[in-house]
Amino acid sequence: MTLAQRTAVTPAAPLRSGGGDPRPRRSPRRGDGWWALVFLGPLGLGIGAFYIWPIIQTAGFSFTSFGVFGDAAFAGLENFTRLFTEPSFYLSLGNTLLYTLIVLLGVPLAVVLASLLNLPGLRFASVYRVLFFLPYVAMPTAIAFVWRIIFNGDFGLVNYLLSLVGIEGPYWISTPGFAIVAVAIVGLWSSVGFSMIVLAAGLKTIPPELYEAASLDGASRWRQFRSITVPLLTPSIFFVTIITVISCFQLFDLLYAILGTTATNATLPRSMSLVYYFYQAGFVNNEKGYAAAVAMIIFVIIGLVTFLQFRFQRRWVHND
Image 1 (cartoon, rainbow, N blue to C red):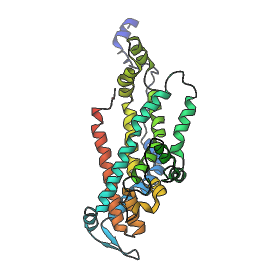
Image 2 (tube, rainbow, N blue to C red):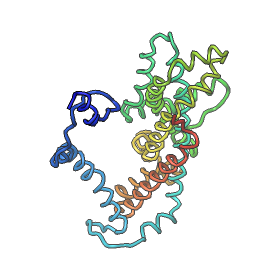
Image 3 (spheres, one colour):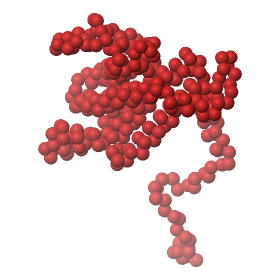
Image 4 (spheres, rainbow, N blue to C red):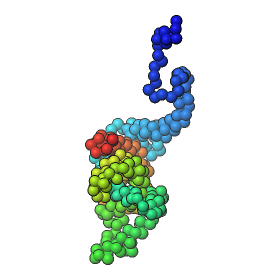
């Protein structure tokens, strides 16, 4: 058989689409999957011990009633029935929603700040980012101490600035209706830095060629911001919104540090949040079963709000 005949009989080797090494790849061995379990095992144990098991345990406690000495008795739906008929629960839920709405105003503010700091040729942009981010990493107790002075009704900076325009400011921390707003202003101030850093990272993923093409077409900076920056930044905006909402529903330390026991003062409309209401029930009134029911409702509300945000993200998040 000639060489030409031999070549015609021998089947041609299949071409690899990606090119590269023509040698056959080694198929995974049966024991390779155990290595994944070895590396993921410690993390899985930590999540199970410190996250999943406490949730299951709290769910069980929500159907019980604890005595003075810690003995638990099955109570059925009694804790949840009481919870949904308690005015303080709805008041704390309303305060939490109000706090969340005010703090969420920091997201569009962070979009504007991140866009301004991303302008070409801006000097000391890194310094500005650090200054905006510092409140996010500062201790809530230190932040609360400073803002308690700023919101002081007699010599605070806020009331002094209001007096310059002829407005007599209230006693923010102890006046009904103003206390939760004052805390929300602090929460907005401290969260803008984190949102701005995340959004600034998202801005780096937008191709500069789009802005160059828009400039050649005569688009103004405002037009570029509306038509390029905001649509392509919606994935980062969505992420920041999710994180902000979850953190707002977990409000406790900042509220407690600023208001203290004033948040539950019976002579004033209460300014407590949902987590503060849980703390009041479980650690002040020593009603562990009822507090567990409050914790489960908080868990369900956060899960529901997060689900709705993911559900409606298709309508406004640019995924291309």
